[in-house]
Image (spheres, one colour):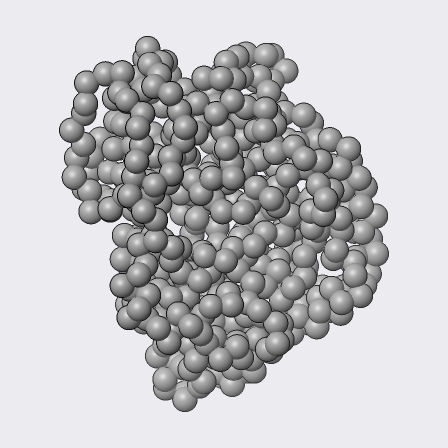
Length: 488
């Protein structure tokens, strides 16, 4: 987030230079792999492929019609986190759909293979993987896990170390930046973020703000606050107090009133991460607990005491506030100044009339840098089960399929959907560029180690601000989980 001021002030330069989703210019494709079958004419799409001079070093291969099975875990019944870019059977004119369709045509034409996705609901993703391993069926070649189950999959030895998988190189850009460094355990790489799907890009924290309210109430310009380094958590609280009002005069703040902040239990860990509080970090291949440091405890206490104040901030998921189906619907009513959310929701916000802008999550002090963070437990993680029968074939397929996703799906999602359809001004576009270009990861959150992420979210349900007591109870369980994890 260090570059927001530069980006906001140099928008015209950025637009001329920005050739990819995250603000870097990639040179021309030089993929030399030859096709084992006849060339397929692909449907046209409005998403220009990512241009890159690097590509997987894969010798030509004919899989003779082999089908690769991808097991994918839904997030309950929450449609915005569904997988929509793997099993695509026809061209519809919708840019992401057609990019996914084209990718599958390329895989069939170039490598003579097919892709099949099996989706399962919620917790059954982990249990389905476990059954396949216990029975040694080898039914699934690739498994897309949610972060909420990552630690369990590692500690139960369900996953293949990518460093032993032929052809795979997760240091390449089609494996999404530096996430591999956060995810390595004792020098082994069981989990990665890849462009098998763009679903992981739906789990990045962002704040939406009501432009009309800012203007009508003569509030500080949020974009200027970001560019000047003054967009802090306390500034968000200060502005929230100015707008909060009991509109219906019943002396009770509820869904009929005007609020400064709308958050949910799921976004609490994102707010803490952006303010420098992390559950755990990976250091020298080992996970170390960091949330119990004196600085983290003090910040947690301060942040949650202010966030859980229902005079100006509310959690849509609390029983007393569940007047709407989602925080997005509540924000669309126009009585919320700041909606703390993630990118999985903003695609739906584009359909509403309310004019909104986008910001990073605030930092804790002006002297610190902004921290772009991912919504760990929702994040899609790419894994290969230990039960695969042909690791060489799976490694080859996975590297090729992920690369084509990087080339085709990434620009379709980021350039055409996020930047092209969702955002409503250049400033928001610059903010998104900087968020995606500087993502960091809380290893403890991403792995949901000791279920601490979930436990922190539950604090919002009860408005519990006794952080010292909470950590005293949870720290022992957290440390035990970390010790087991480090022994994998």
